[in-house]
Length: 459
Image 1 (tube, rainbow, N blue to C red):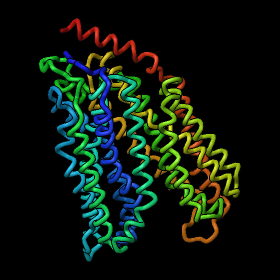
Image 2: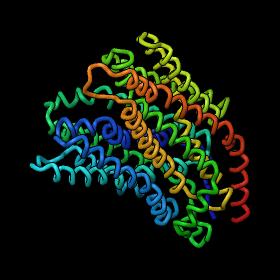
Image 3: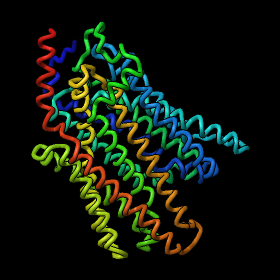
Image 4: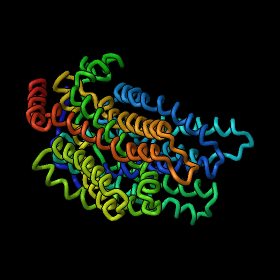
């Protein structure tokens, strides 16, 4: 039996902002790791690029499946009103410390010792600590409210905070490193500051949020914490909307990896202006600070599914526009801005994933926040891994030579495939999946109503 006292109530702005600040906690460390860890390893710590690539590839395989394990652990350790928040309290300090260790490679004389250190600290941060805090944090979004409008608002706030952090990380990290001396030790100093900010942000999340959707009946055989991993996974795969949102998460993060991983190659070799990377980077992130809040009224009118699908089609169209622009830099900038318009709708994926929790409970009788929210992290990791791998395979297949001053015609085609056509194909595919199979926006109000009626009868 579940008690949903005040689960549909409006949240205070203090709680909304405090919850969304968890994205500051996650992104200050995860974003800098994604964007600059390779640079730190190869240019400052003296770790070979080949060794780093091998370690990251092997670790990503382990990392992707750690989400399901953490989802199971969270379900098994859940208590009434304390399913997600206790994990945030336990892990936010170790999460920050693990990031500092990640950017503190000792001056070992041998490459093997460095490789072992990188393997241990990379997996400590990504596979263990990030997973142990990201899964509960994402679950908390489904536990503090069942009000879909409130979920939209906190999803919007999360995207705004993520955009702010991404802009800071992408635009100013190297400046901060320079201020700190421009040495290997400078990275430890800067990351330590980021870690403190992360820990403070997570403390606000823990301190000022409340889990209102509560499982009270400890003897309920349909409680996910009473079921085995196999039984939970069997029920999870009956949730068609969870499966769809996982596919979309893979598609979205594939596109992000393809975009960030090949933007420099495209601008430097196809457009012929490597200096334009900074402006394109700003055009991708800064407009979203305005576009994301402006998108919320449209979500109320056309629904989350339609908004996300339209955004994916805009991203695809923007990439075709960039292709047609050729070497016209101004038009490339316009296309980049249009791409930002499309990505400004991606925030609705979070509320959509939260909605699948109620659908799964309605469908199977079991509420599985931990397992369902693992989709967001799992999709991020799998999508990023696939996108990064595909980029490298295509560049290698088409004969790209990083040391060459001028790339061959086939290499230029490979860069265009990576930057333009992978994004077009995957974005269109995601939009088709959403339009054809995702109908939860219309079904959700009736599902919540029926769940409330069930619990009133059970009471």
